[in-house]
Length: 198
Image (cartoon, rainbow, N blue to C red):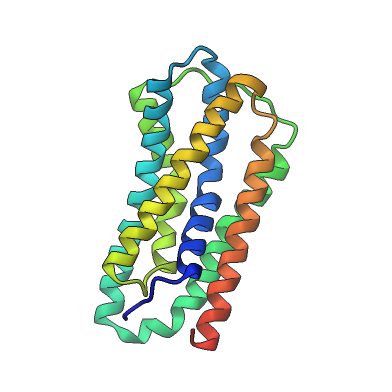
């Protein structure tokens, strides 16, 4: 499928980045809270790890699904349904977790290298499912989408680290709720566009 470089493509990729980055944002708040004297280099390293995993997971999902779609074209018509179900599930879980933890101010210990890797995987695992939602992208569009997700994640995590150093984790549950709403909205948009044949 040949795609155009539309405003909708860039807007959707950026919004996917925002929605997916909310878990990493919440963890960044906690990391910043527990390391108030964290230096800029370490902040960039933490944000970079989150951004890397947020880019790798959708690409891995895209690769798996794109291969399947290329071999079995009957899957094409189910992609809007799969996207809606997955993003609604992920977004709904984020909404639930955010509301459930709205009064939590639990602190987490300072994180080492392997702990950071674990955090990166844990906060990006949902992004693997996003590969289903971008399965009709060609390789270049998928890479650009993943790069935009990574860039947005990096910026949001840097903001989370700075805020964490100053205000702590009180914003974490609101970030989770916002991320959930965004992902559900994108799922609905993909579903409607798929039904209308856009």
